[in-house]
Amino acid sequence: MRKQRRGGFKLNHRRHSGANPYSKMWLPVRVPKLHMNPISPVNGEKPGVEKGAQTGEERPSEPSASGKLLVSVIIPAMNEQKTIGAVIREARRVHPHTEVIVVENGSSDRTAKVAAAAGARVISFPEPLGHDVGRRIGAEAASGQVLLFLDGDIVIPCVRLRPFIQAICAGADIVLNDYHGPVNRTSVHPVVDAKHVLNILSNRVDLGGASMTGIPHAISQRALKKIGLKSLENPPLFQAMSIVSGLRVMTVYGIAVGRMNATRKKQNGKDPLVDVIVQDHLDAIAWITSHLGTRAGFTDLERKRIRDEVKP
Image (cartoon, rainbow, N blue to C red; front, side, top):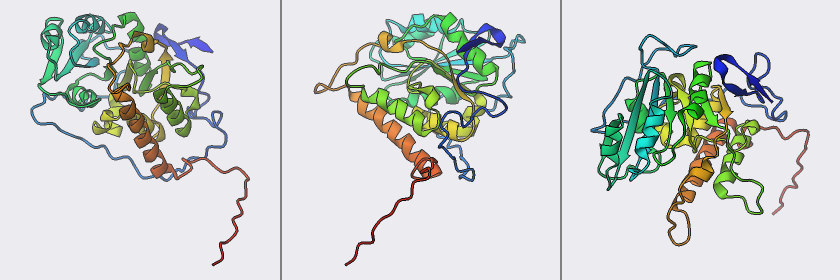
């Protein structure tokens, strides 16, 4: 069910009811542990990286018209000279007060020059940073109250990106693409499986396969301060930590990026990133069980387990 909300965007309204946005209506058998260890931000720094302000004021409830920077669009890119210009042009139009930060790492083409010509602030590295490290570096340099994450090879019209910004301004902390991957197949892709399993164990089955692994997604400065920069290098972990810590995580708009994503070159017949992404989700699951117990906070209902003692 979708309802029209403030600012004209359509809010996915499957999950929030009453004063408690994390109602037991989702999974009645989940009883989270209330006295968990607090989350300590881990602030990683990388020498030679441009840094922006990290302590922005609380985001306004409505987009500002005062000239104050509101949105930072972060785009990691590697050898994306064909598409990066169009991605930046759409990104700059999401809000009147927007900066675009391109983290260009290990490119052998003209990605950096094209990005700069399109009006982005470019942070360049001669060698590849590693999967998702660019997100953390871009967030570290960002000055906006809303951080919107895109990829350099997927051009998304600005009108489809604005709902993510509006939802953060309306009070959300993390806004995910309402895209769940193909699940009606005999063999579901392991990355799609991992996304669904993580959301189930996070007591957010309503999120389906929505994930910070995919784009676009937006986060608030409040979420960044609470969870910490370092965890952005593992998006599923950042997402799980945000849910467990009580931040407002939601979907707002669906963009089928799976159809828009370029096919990656396979190594020995396999996508090299599959194992990396699945491991990220396993790390997030390990974090959940370490904080909520081996059953991830779910009860065993009324089951009584009887085990015979093993006699020597």
